[in-house]
Amino acid sequence: MEFKDKITKMMQTLKITNSQLAERLDIDMSLVSRWRTGNRLPSERGTHMEQIADFLIESALERDLLDEFTELLGLSADSHRSDHAYLRSHLIQWLKDDNFEDNSPIIRGFINKIEFFTQNSGFDSPTQKKHDTPDYEVKDVYVGTEGKREAIKRLLHQLSQSEELVDVYFYSDENLAWITDDIDFYFMIIEMLSDALSKGHRLKIIQPYYLDFKNMMESIEKWLPVYLSGQIQTYYYPHEIKSIFGNTIIVAGDIAAVKSDSIRTNSQNSINFYVTDTGIVHSIRENLTSFIDHCNSLMNVFGFNDLKELIDYLLKQGDNPGDLIALHQTLSTMTMPMEFMYELTDSKELHQAHQKRTSLLKNNLEIYKYIEIFSLPSLEELDEGKLQIELSNHISPEAIFYDRNTFRIHLQNVIDWLETYPNYSVIVLDQLFLNDVKITVKKDKTAILYKITPTPIALAFDNKDIIDAFYSYIVSVINDSDEKTLDRDFAIERLKDYLKKL
Image (cartoon, rainbow, N blue to C red):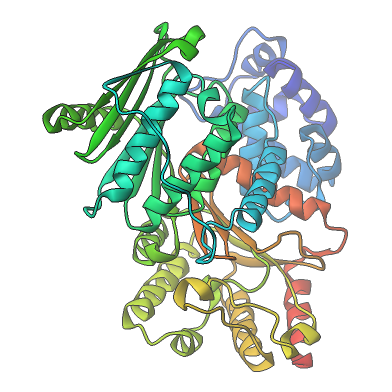
C-alpha cells in the first residue's frame, strides 16, 4: 500500500475525520485531503509524520481500538500496550515504507546459528586437536580460487608463527564462495583465525555494501564462528561499488598481505598477489585503514578476555540516553544491588564500573523507559543451584549460581526500582524462550547479544536495521508467550508474592 492508502485505511479504522486530523496538526484540512488522494506527501523535513503517528496511537487508545490498530500494523495488541515509543516507531516506518518488513524471524535464525556454533565448534576446548601445519606453495602470484586458498593458508600460518601481536584486516567484495564452497578449507581458516585471536591478535573485517537486511545478516553469519572466538571489529561500506572489478585484501600487521583482483562475475579466475615486502605491506594496510574512515561500524565483539573493553562500551552506551528494552533468562546485571556485586568480585574496578553504570541508568530513567522481560525460576532450580547469575562468568573464571537468599536480595532490588522509577517496568514470562542468551536493545543506539556459555561472548551491533530487527525479535518473543504479566501493578504484586515464597 502507498501512504495515501495507509493513512485512509487507518483513519477509517479509528473513525478519524479530515477535520479532526487537521485540527490536531494545526494545518489546513485541504492538506489532509491532498495526503489522502495522493497529491501530496508529508514533508521529510517536517514533523507531520511524527504528529500523525502520535494522534493515531492516542485515538486508538482513547477509542478502545488498539486491537484493530495493531492488526493493521501486523502486531499483537497486548504486547505493545505499554510501549508508546515502539508503536510510534513501527507506525512511522509502516507509513513511510511501502515495503516495510518485520525482520525478527531473521534474528531468530541468527540466534539459532549462534547456539549451533557454540555447542558444536569446540574451538575453546584445550583437549581438541588443533589444525596441522597447512600445506601450501610459496609463490609471489597465485591463480584462481585454489590459488587464493593457498595464499590465505600461507598468510595465516605466518601469522601463527608471529610473537608480535598485530591487527589483521580483511576486506572482500568478491563472491565469498571461495571460502564457503570447500567446507574443509572453511573450517580450517575459521580454526586458524580463532587460534590467532585467542593469542591476542585482533581482527578487523570490512564488509561491502549490503543490498538488503537479509544479505547483511547472511554475510555476518559466514563469519559467525570467528566472531564467537574473540575481539573483532566489523565495518561496512554504506554505498554501492559499481566497478566490474572485485577485490579481496588481507593484511596481517607488517608480516604479509594477500591482494586479489578479479572480474566480479568471474572471481574463480582471480589473480592473487602474496606480498612480504614491509614497505608494500604497510602501504596496503594504510589504504585499508583509510577506507575504514569511509565505512560505518557494524559490530564489536567482546570475548572473555575483553571484559575491560566491554565495560568501556557499556558505559559509553549508558551515557547515551534512550529507551531501553532487555530480554533475559533471569534478573539482569543492571538491577543487581551493590552489596551483591561486592559478593561476586573483589575487583574495585568492577565495583566502580557497576556503580557508574547503575547511576547512568537511573539518570536515563528520568526521561526514557526501561523495560525488562524475564522469567522467574522454580524454587527447585534455586535449591539445586542451577540458576546462573547473569554474566557471572564474565566476572569470574567459574560460573556463580543463585540460592534463595541471593535471589531474594536481587529481586527485592527490582521491586524497589519498580516502586521508585515510573519509567522502569518488567514483563514476567512464564516460559523461557532463550537458551543461555540475553539481548539488550537501546533504540537507535545499540543492540547487544550475550551468549553466556560455554565461554561468554558479547556481540554489540551499531547498525540501525539490525537494532530494529532485534527490537522486533524481543517483541515477537513476548507475542509467542501465552502466559505473560503485562500490567505494571500486577507485575509488582506477582514479584512480591514470589518473594514471600523465598
